[in-house]
Every structure is written in structure tokens, then in C-alpha cells.
Image 1 (cartoon, rainbow over the protein chains, first blue to last red):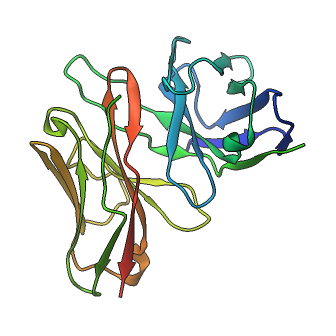
Image 2 (tube, rainbow over the protein chains, first blue to last red):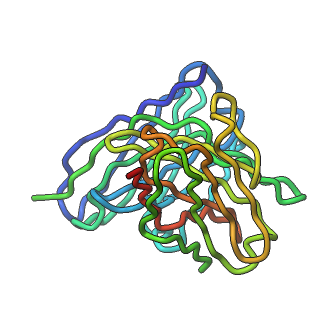
Length: 123
Length: 106
């Protein structure tokens, strides 16, 4: 049974870089796709980006200039860096197992989610 | 950028059928997924590929998708189904979520 666990600082200062890691247990990150999603308090879900089994990435266009995702197969985890943060980046950050999109357009969504980690941007 | 629109709230009486819509340009040409999120919990996938239910999701959850609208239906709604529901689709190499619908079971 695949499980995901987010980790990282709960408090980040404005203008600094938010760095989170998602550790995968019960499965290999060399399979599937892996996404980051965030949710400000009382608001909806916002997709940040994803990294493929092969290491290629897709990012939300609205965040693309500030986001970098990477993976470490030896540690079976993947990471999110979001630079130049402001208070608007305060949210619960989730990692999730995502699906490939087939040539026929089949997409199966995100079937396993981490518990989420709260990140506050404040001085 | 692609947008998915959901009603902010839907109310249903226990035992009745709740329907939640998700609208997007030619959404019927894409595949829609639906997530349930209860307060303080992570989202749970309840429908994928428009109509498929993951293992462990009750049969009372069903989906459809045609034209510009995807629909999540919950038949015989129970108090435990009270939650926020989000639709999702893939478009132009990005994942898009709808704004979410708060389902209230009165």
C-alpha cells in the first residue's frame, strides 16, 4: 500500500524559498507521476506541478516562474521548491500520486494523497 | 488557461440524489475526475475517467460527462457524504481543478 508523507519547514520568511519533500513508501517513484497541490485555508485546491517517472516536469503556468520540482530515486522521494514566497503562498501543501495521460487522452487522476503539511509565510 | 466551474454549494435531503456539476469548454472531450474532501482531511478520489469508481468507493457515487458538463451524482445520500467535492481535468499539459462544491446534507 503506497503512502506519501510531506515534510519541511512550517514557517518560511517572505522572499525566501519554500522547500518541501514528499517521501514515498510502499512503492517506487520510478513508476507513476507525482504531483504537488496546495490549499489556502478555507479555499479550493490549486495544482502546482508534477514530475514524471522519468523526471520530466509540468508546472502550473501561474507558478511556473517560481517552481522547481525534482526527485531522488535513491531516497524514493520528490521535492518542491517555490522561490520568492509571499503571504499568498501560505497554504496546506499536499503531495499525491498522479497518473500518466495516454495518447488517447485517458487520465486517471490522483489516487493516493499525503496528509498535507501547513506552510505559513511570515516574518 | 482552462477553467472548470462548479456551484459553490449544493444541498440535499438524506436518502435523495445529490448532483454536482462541473462546466468547462468541451469538457466532454476530456476525462473528468472527482474528489471528496472532508474538513481537516486530504482529498479522496471518488470518480476517474468520467465514470469509474476506485476500489472502496461506494456504488452510490456515479459520474457522467458530455458536452461542456461533467456531473457527479450521489444516490441515497448519507450524512457521511457531507463534504467538499472538486472536479478535475487535464488540459494542455496541466492539471485543472474546479473551485469546489460544498455538499450539505440537510
